[in-house]
Amino acid sequence: MASGRAQSAWRLVGFVRPYSGTVVVAMLCAVVYALSSGASIGMILPVFDDVLSGREGDRTGRSIGAILSEDVLPLAGSAFERLAGFDLDGSVEAFSETGAAARAALREAPAREALAVVIAFIVVLIVLKNLAAVMQTFFLARVEQGVLFDLRRVLFGHILSLDLDYFARSRTGELLSRMTADVDRLKGAISEAMVNVAKQAILLAVFMTIALMASWKLTLVTLAVLPPSALAIGALGKRLRRKSHRAQEKMADFASVLQETSIGIRVVKAFSMEAFEQRRFDRILRSHARFETTLQRLKALAGPLTEIIGMGASALIFWYGGNEVLGKGGMTQGQFFVFLGAALSMIDPVKDLSKSITRIQAGMASSDRIFAILDEKPAVVESADPVDISGFSDSIVFEGVSFAYDREQVLHGIDLTVRAGEVVALVGPSGAGKSTLADLLPRFIDPTRGRIVMDGVDIRDMRLASLRALIGVVTQETVLFNDTIRNNIAYGHADLPLERVREAAAAASILDFIEELPEGFETIIGERGVTLSGGQRQRLAIARAILKNPAIMVLDEATSSLDTESERQVQRAIETLVSGRTALMIAHRLSTIRRADRIVFLEAGRIVETGTHEELLAAGGRYRKLYDLQFSDAV
Image (cartoon, rainbow, N blue to C red):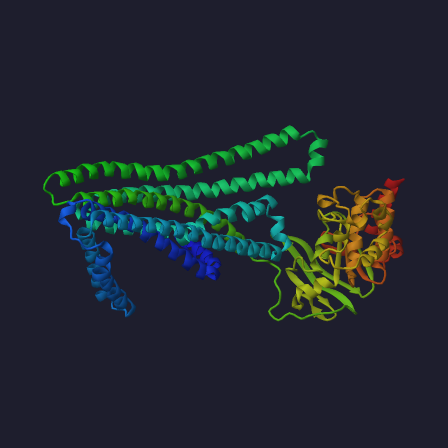
């Protein structure tokens, strides 16, 4: 499990790497924020011990400007020169001398002048701190949105590369959840892991250093609160990761139910199942709400738990430190207030670190789910050295083709040759393997044994894009998009002239219907073409195939769900579509395939009969029985 988390984190870093320059700038802003925050706390010491202590008469007559220019600035210049020359030991010593000289200047100069300088310096530090905070957010937003954009882009591209088998065993709602909610949760993990953790760690180190300089004894007392805080944070983080993972799974569940109900709303209403679907959705939603409630409670618990522990220690520190100042412990008021300010300031970084860790844990749970999709390997892969093809001229040969779904054999040793320009119909009972055989041609799936050869080349050696460019597919379940009629016909080619789209619509026998619409080709047809009839949807799909002008057509039950008049219209469109083309036609209605050059009868994944319509009728075999059954039912 730990190695898996580390692997997910490392893979996430890979998406951040292109923005490493911006991350470095954001981290520099975080460093400036931390140092200026620490310096503003440190200014308490000179205010109390150097400016407000002593009397005005004890100070020299030199102005603060003269003292700084004569005593402090030369030492500061020497310190920076040594730093530029990589003399680290010398620069540390020089900066220490500069600090001592600056404090001496505050003690010698007139108190009001010294106070004005200190106040001005504090104002500059606060402005610098807030400017650094704004710039950090500015640069970090670029990284977050850039990584989310890249991740969604890669995720969507990978989903498109997966084969049909993956979509058959995956839920659409789950994919939507991972693409949206899971990726969004990663945004918090990125900002926390890349910058905020570093900023809070630097803040903690700065405040810890200031506290040690003020009183090492009191600092040791303060450190006593860190181990229990770390243990509490670690336990919460582990539990939060588990709950976050389950909450995202539940979100995927109700997204799936919402998607299924939207698609099947006609069936829901026809069976009066609104109450049933509401109860089903409520159960999943209630379960998700429970996990999310627990998740939010765990997040809310982390910060206050750390603060309560810190406040308890602060009370002890106040009591101990106050006695040091009131007694003879050698601690000045300035040192005590500096320590107190640093100690109290450490609470926020520790609390923010705990929140950061919980957000990172939630984000890493989402990353596990995202990378689980990216780890899916398509079963259909392109050859290492694919062959580009530009046309089809001879034949398609199925040589001993077999296929199995999860060890269930669907096709058994199919041998079939389809000549160029030939229309071959595949018929047979449901489950005979007709659609599976047709899906093999455009490589939606690959055979488990045997091969398919097109013009002497195994289609697995062809470039997928060039193979599929030769093939048009029209299925029973017409796929249309919530767009205009024009864009559905000219799918992916919006720049095509309208005249070519009109010609395709006319060939598909749907031009008259389109032109009668108020907005014509610019009519929005709704999701999945819901505003159209079944026949209209099918003819739009045929128009799209005609516009593609493929050399080979695959028609899978293109007229099975249509009424008689719609079937006639679609059949005329199909005849136009297959004219002069090679075609594989799958049909239950034998009336639609009488004109096929050859009919292949499949049963239990095997070819049992082949011939023309007349030959098979005369043979009196299975095709004749199916024909008689259909037409006797019609009578």
